[in-house]
Length: 91
Image (cartoon, rainbow, N blue to C red; front, side, top):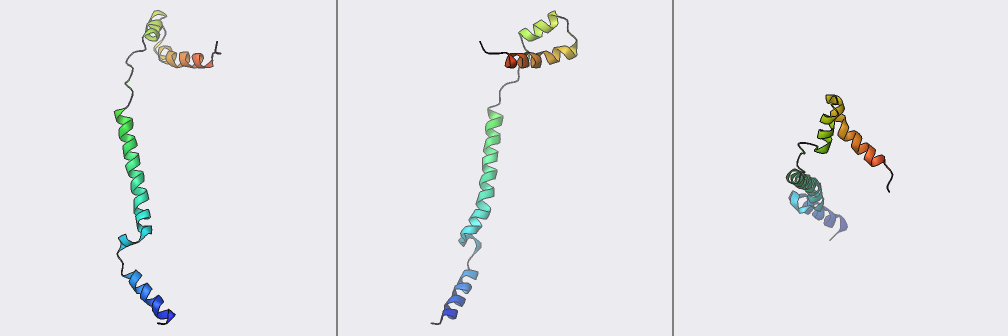
């Protein structure tokens, strides 16, 4: 057989294959599909394992009430306490 005949036969055989026979097609479909599955699993884990919402700050709420702070100051108090605690040097 001549070289051009073999090449043309291979081209014809390759052209007649269905899409799932090509490895690159599985990469094109598989990589985005795996990203969607991983994102969905991460979302489910995040929703099911979410920490409960703290209804009251306990001592902070009592302290705010005792000092009769304004509502705006009372809502800022937990953040300020956390900031001050984080900024304090370790002993």
